[in-house]
Length: 372
Image 1 (cartoon, helix red, strand yellow):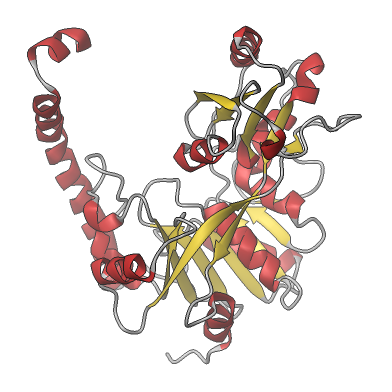
Image 2: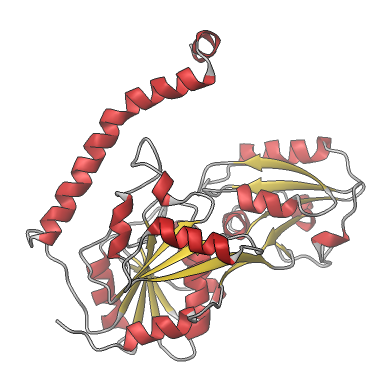
């Protein structure tokens, strides 16, 4: 059927057909978002505030804006001055309800990103997962009353908690002002709802972004004067082995030449920046991509290893993302004899310092007196 449609319609016509089919659903979705937000605005649905300052880090689009590295960036910068509690819903975990993170739990108990954050800052933060953020905050504070700052991961749409600071991330390559509501586009809510944010970060910017590009982005976002806009970029570190190995065979991707091969492996929402990074080196690059939060099976690994063995290269490595490494490390099906050949690239969100330092601005908002 798909081939038949492709034969009788050109690309533009197929796009118009899809748009005509999805537009009514996008309207229905938008109506649902409007009704829910109106219920909060007029007090039918209640927001709850907490004595401990709450910082929400979220977005208005579906996936791929870099929430996890930015949460990690905030934790890294503030964990020496605050006793931080991180709360996430634990997307795609196989458990339910409130769970406090501990070393014996894996990604399937906590979710990929919370597991990654917890182990990266082991001993420096308290972390929990819970679908109900109000219940999660209450339980965290009962268990660890020393918490004096809470970070909510992916909670811009979760209005039952009223954060002291609302941070919204937008992807530089997918600006929300050119996007549309689900399912036509990737917007979770109308673009103008970005005006609810206290701080907006344009993420995944080019390293050589110009002042003119930033000014144009600022103009298109059309924020209130009280809202603060920042720009950030992803920084990649040297590759690390996914599994403990007796000898590190890949210390730096720049050591690879044109006769060497990288098999990129991704299961994330937006693989393009990672793939672009891999292709910035001299080695040949082939990519296998799965959906976001993909749960790798035995058959997946059989296929991946088959492709890897068929590809030609003087030196060959599988290079994956930090998020995928979490799932692969805790997966019993990855072949033992291939563990020396799979590496991941750690990433860090780095907010550019311009007229105003992001962390200083964030702390000022955290410590500001509430006027209610």
